[in-house]
Length: 544
Image (tube, rainbow, N blue to C red; front, side, top):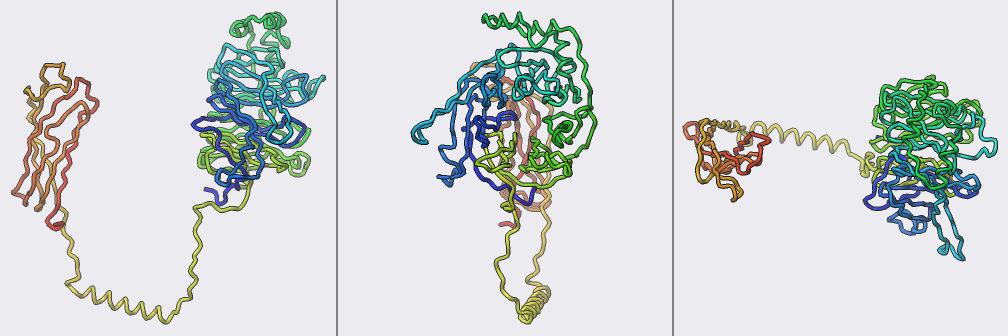
């Protein structure tokens, strides 16, 4: 456990009884204001937008009621959220929400009022794409730019959606440009976009990181930035079956490079160690973290002594401009409620948080850069920063500072030693230990079955009798015991009668407690356990 605790700046419980997972949290700005807003979506389909103010009216809740800007029920479970410029005619960012069979792009609309309470916020649907395949995750990027960016707009961002069967759907704004099935993808994995090489990196079912050039995927899919016939049919309102497009692209695509992880991947992200340099790929595994170059070479690997839950890669402006101190900075969240801040495989700081994070984001809130936002599975949203507040389990300080007189302490020690010697020589103070009673249970099984009127099924509609077995029990003790109680426990549908037998006093070796117990089936069910447990409770003569 970490020695220090992350200092909480703002917190909020998102919903009640809602569930969250990786992809349900995103931070970003929708205006020219550099301050970020927090977008959280639950599996119950409710999307919320927060703007933490830092001024807490209610000290118990550690947030203000006006911090929640928007709460809207979208009607379907939210799988992932992305923020970017997904509309060609808009200079601001939009919100992309991935559902199980649909991708929707929403505009964040703010209507100013006379007072602060008069402002209104809403989400307006800009466009959406319906899919006949269940989705898994998505990533954004300038697909098809060739690593040089789009000539028309360097800020444009497209979306790539991966389905549960490993099919990639690429959408350029309102149109669909590519459908391609990846090989060896029986179970989907994390996915990211490499802008420098215009490629898509993902983790296949055989635990390999595979990188595919977007141009190779487009050629193999038989599409050149979208099929005109499909676009015409979509404008007319006709449904296009994605399975037909995938089956028509019979060309097999090969990865540009592949790297064997040897374990399941929890996440994959990209970053740049130095500005205008090649990109690096970080893959979080169950026991290791891998850092690769954009051509598949291993830079470093870190082994964990803990179970990671999520991670986030971040690079400050200073680290990208300072060529003398290059490095990859990232934060790892663990199931032991600890955040590890690391650089190039070396842990720089560790802080304890209040919950297990399923996603971590780094944001600028109220002009405070580097604010760490964490979201738990139950919806605990926190904004914290690194500090030196010790955790509550630290060793308490000794409040007493009384000076000790050595002379008086020696006199008390001598007096206590004298009392101990006198007690050891006094035979009346010696406590004699008595041996515990050795109780044994003997079972005489007759291996004979009989039927009586008393052994029947519990249901009255069944009139047939049930075979029963009678077992004789004998209880012996090495010394005299009293208040002896024998209990029998069996599992349903078996029944024992009687299940409690009071034997009273059993004195010495000659006195033996006996009992006869009948076993049968009370219900017409198949027994799942044939064991019977016998328990004897008693008091010795010294206890009375």
